[in-house]
Image (cartoon, rainbow, N blue to C red):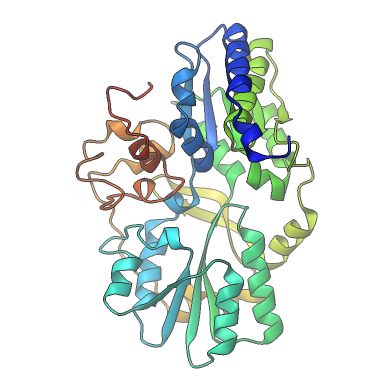
Length: 367
């Protein structure tokens, strides 16, 4: 397969669905970890075409959604300061903090700018030494290498006016936390292909072995997901619990070792709060001691904030797969993509946004 359309071939999709129906004898429950996978499943209606009673559980793999509220409040406290140019990817601007969001802050005069790479922010700092340039560095292992390279480049340039507000999270500890929950219903995982393209899948092997749960590294197109689901179901039916790779065109077991080296050089593992979920041990990254001078939280002293979630939002339950977006009383009425109460309704990878874009209502939602 060389072209995108071939990963969306309806004849092949029907064949995979037929094979899945022939293979599945139990109402298996499989979690896709990545929000991009969730959007494909929901947009294409794949979750509604699965064998009877079989269910996809939508996981916490939306980096925008799990960025803790405290980080967003810190971002806005920094962005509001005179002389600061605050930079971020565009999907972070409308994520609600306790009182406002970055887009509203920009409308009130703050210098908040959208960049396409963290290196854009580094170049901005190099070209404007009169400003403090801050980049909001969030995401899973996928974005960590680029952010590490930005810090390394800023260090080589000797920049004193560039810093990063770091809120990176790691996938394996999140899977472990889900599986340790006594109410967990997940029987297999579809692992995010882009994360594994960076990190490989060796970290998942102990999880599959300890919890006896199949994990299939999976891509993002409809045929990727159908094949990944079929591979997971085959393992479940045959009593296996291994890590398999569906995304062979992009992922190797060892991952991208040069990217991993950059991440290990710039960051160290730390405990991290996940929005709506809570603190998970050793589930995030922070700047290593050698690069702490680039830590925006230290530079601007934004400790002591009091974040407060909207009490009506059930984002935490949605992110862990315990509830569907349509279970929320505010879904589609008081909470919409234009006026979100929580992060999953904002992001292009958020489950609530996926359901809303697909026109899902409580009557049509899979359970």
